[in-house]
Length: 376
Length: 206
Image 1 (cartoon, chains in turn red, orange):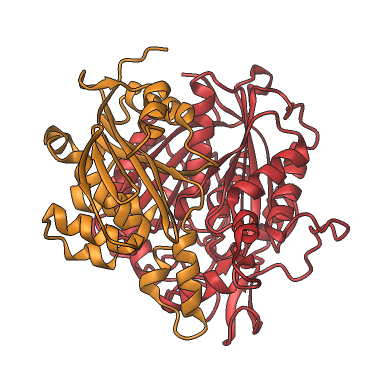
Image 2: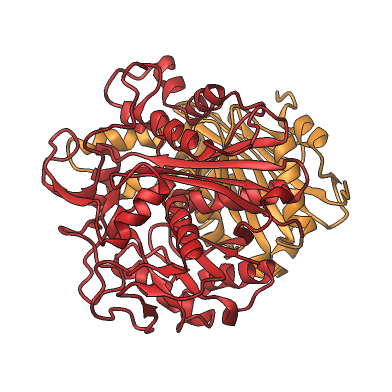
């Protein structure tokens, strides 16, 4: 099967504007999650990782919304110093978001103009035109697995021979719409979240963007590869995860198989780890079913919050940095095992060879995704 | 391309009318979209109270999938991980987003919030039928038969899925359209091609 190489990556979050900056902050244990009292988006104080200085925004341009500016800034940085020709018919732009420009709703009367402006199609066209992409962009909107599904889609499109390069980018902002929804579910933690911990009490939301550039070009041989990916559905509940973890485990098994590795070859797992009671329990069961319970695992949600459509890409970019430096980051917020199947949650920096790594995600609608990165 | 996949069945719901494999099955005389969906549900004589909790896209997509699968019992014999969905539309969940936002000032409704993602309809169809395979929801300006053909053929040809329900489910206010295809390797129906999908999608309805 065609090798898919990681050409470059970017993360823009409240912690920094490049993957390297973000990775350095995480190594220092810095979290972007802070307490905010912003009545424009919530009547009550809340903890989230939010941009406060908006330095990524080009104030000269009124053309693009914050969501689009985030995507443009992330893609620009990822493409810098690469030889990827976005105006080639062999390059596709794939965008991932859950809610895009939803913040525009409610701020003005709903009419045909607003209907067009709020559409992800409009954002995708603006972003693609900004860079002169030759092909129409593809948009993935599949809840919290969107980022991983966008990477899997890029991998498949290259493997099917249609494209040689895929620029995969995702972003979401935290709006009153999204915040009120998670509040209505009573899913938010009043403090920095504690994935997999006994005292975990919900998630934090976060905003950010990330880009990962994929290519089959042999000049990138030697780079880390995206070797396998799979998606599954729980067929159980639209807002609660599987009781058994069997379906996420199925996606993990299929991703490993496609990557040509076994559970024994996996050196690290970057979990979804939202820090809700049910998600982390389900993931621990799935990891155990897949025979990965001794493999070091972390969740990055206490650093970035849950960045929704960007999460899979942000966390994959950190996984790639971890592999490049053979460094597993501690799972911030974790002290005492809080899941019924004891998985190997990392609570200190671990320096160890990382040749094959797994990244997972799950989301509303019962969807799960797993991808495998390999050095060989 | 090694194309040996087929459109085993197709279903359209548009202009208050339900078509299965091109034949009109039912016409509703209700005057608004939500009532049309309820009348189709009642016409099908199904007992699935969860239907009433769903948002517009989920109701429409769920109904179309029920009709699509009627008479295709062999899909139930397939292993759950071997059946999946690839869906698309233009406006994601905007219809429900607008309704949810109206509740936010007062009492934000978790029951509506969960439907503010377009892929929830795929979850509803999976729950109903115990389908556990690949799911994907894409956003396009208009129905993209070429991409649908390419993506679904990849899933079928690489044995990632045995059957895939694919197509278009759009609801925005009073405007709606569902066109679903059951694609698989069973040599029956017509070839799973962009030409045949476009032909069915754009077929004049009367």
